[in-house]
Image (cartoon, rainbow, N blue to C red; front, side, top):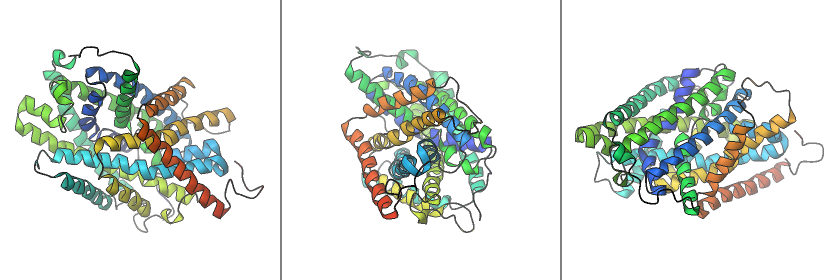
Length: 449
């Protein structure tokens, strides 16, 4: 097998993106968003989060169209900071961060899936739930042992279930929406003090968690047909589509279920339809959410498994990960590595997993690739740019400032986790670079752009 084949069109690319973006996210995170400011005023976070996601989506669209290769941000960092100097180290750190944030993100879907399985298994103990979440990942690994075009067909089916699930919730919400419930604001809802700003930042982090995945198609860049047109469209269609779906679901929930009850429910979606149709509907929707969640984590594991592979092929990461399966043409060793990390992460709580994954990835991924875009633009390299963001540099500035605000709102322990994982990765990189005589230990004349 010489390399990966370009087989993913616009429909496949968009379904892969949206399947992992929607997934179980709105059915588990909306309660957490409400908790951040203790009331529907927390939905201000939807405005902040959507603006940040759309701005960063334009950054990703431009970078992905110009650099359609496996790896996504990994490739963007190398291009922006120099493939043999700072870009080499930052690319390593991005892959290093994926070993933490990727499994955490997939594990959040596993944990949420098990929450909805409790509708059918109410006596499931805490440890049994954790073991079940880990077991789901084992099933995923086996499911992904196949060719990319076979996976694309499967994702189309899972995406269809996602649309049916979210469509049912949204239509039900429209038909039974009660404005008095949805806008039942508590006293002093809008204080605009430091605590309010931190709560809004935490809520925005939860919203951005629901948007995670709009860049997923860039990880599969080497497998996308007509990438200069397909990647930007898939990214922007995904952000806009998911914004409409998730915001509609959010207001549907609190327009039927009082928000004080909603923010305490571990399976809000099932509670929502139960109050309208009865217990049978709760069971049916819970089953559909489980299928939707499986599609989401399936797409996530698919995309993240390509990142260590791309780095290994470039000689920046462990070379053993740079091999494709001899007959099916996918990076099987990288898949097993990310899968193993997901199994371990499935034993932590949902709230901690979400905050930790946001802390781990904001610095090196979202802030990193935005700075890379500024550097590429400033150098005025003779690079073909099939797509250029509208209104440059405003969207890039919004992305940079917005993600910095969200990171600083996560709290001390999670900020420490995000910084600490990068510092540890820097030590590992410098140790490897020293032994291999790579930058910054390369002999004079061997480094450069």
